[in-house]
Amino acid sequence: MNKQSIVEFESVSKNFEGAHGVTAVRDATFEIREGQTVAIMGPSGSGKSTILNLAAGLDNPTSGSVYVQGRDLSELSDNQLTRLRRDKIGLIFQSFNLLNTLTALENVSLPLRLRGIAKTEAEERAKSLLDLVGLNDRSDHLPDEISGGERQRVAIARAMVAEPVLLLADEPTGNLDSEAGEKVLRILKDLNSEFGTTVILVTHDRSAAENCNRVFEIVDGIISEESNDRRAGASLTEAMATE
Image (cartoon, rainbow, N blue to C red; front, top):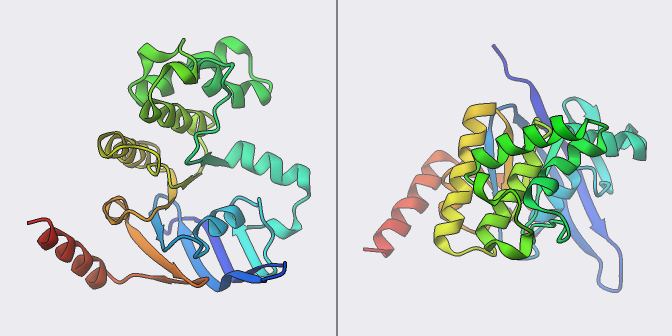
């Protein structure tokens, strides 16, 4: 059975105006299908985060079209885009973006409450996600009362609570130590395996990318997919360097 297209870029470019105009994405064409895990790698300022913002409808392409589940984002109203992000897309940020006045349970259940779901039902779902990410004993803690790695796991639970078809993660391990980062990557992999969620991960970490089915590299706004041979070669080179 052919898997459904989740994200498709069709000749997409994104320019930013200013004194020094920048083309963040140049004529990008690719398709990501349901259940795939995809890493987007590249140096700082190469356009990685812009790809995620375009896929989430947070940025509009200067030219070309972006589709999510076959819907052209440029044809959706602001309200329709908001509902799409609420119902179909989970967003994970490097800076966590948790509300400091809410407990872990309240942060995770908030997206469901905003959809009008009763508090009891929303919190039951939130508890199950916190348990899934190993934080059932932190549900009544505020963000300032838990570690950075735990905050990121709360953010993942919040992103998954509405069971999105697409999870977009922008450098989710960037502010974490290696042990906490590995836990986060394992959780993302488990979520993909258990729920079939499509994951697009922006990272500069080669080891994080190796957890994904596909790896794209973006340099000067030009995105291309790495071949299996190239990925294997990169892994071998890194392994030899650590011996």
